[in-house]
Image (cartoon, rainbow, N blue to C red; front, side, top):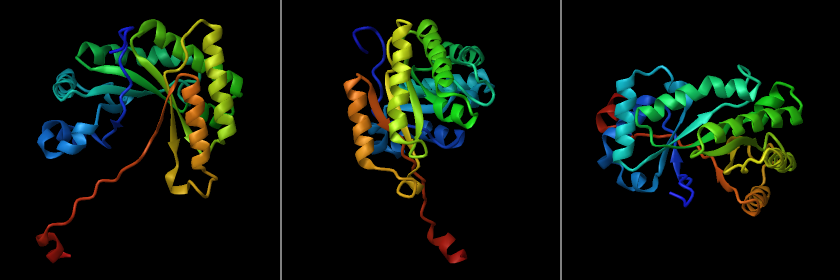
Length: 237
């Protein structure tokens, strides 16, 4: 914990692809000792668990706490189902309160591409920024211990625009007397990184920009799990 009583941002967060995979990881910690030692938090979209029965959530959250994992939620701010930051917050906040009441070791929320979503909806950048700032300010007010970060796509959206977007968000928060973002995260399209003009030099430049602004910087990586077939399965094929 920090001196202000807020959690420290995890260095490695994993998002298992489905509930069955997550339950297996939590139930069989001895089966992945090296990976488990590196992981500091579990990431999950908030809406996916909004209707899960209480007992199932209690069990998962208790297992996370027992293994020393934090919990990070992927959340919306500007989305096709809600373009207004206040309305989006009002929809999601009851889910977060329920998770916390059931024992979730919730330390951070990662906003899922508000700028990318807003541009897809043909909203003006300044409008997207204002709605996102509205959302972040509400999180600060109602969940002051949570760290708040933004995830945005790259290189589908150019790096110069990332820098302008980041500055616009923090300037909007500063005007309202709010603290800046806690972290900024790139969701890189690794499959088309070169084809879309991705550049490691640009990523490093953004990392330095974030550090200069006092933000943590992170990248999303995708990993596909592969299990080798047994000898019996190979004989069948």
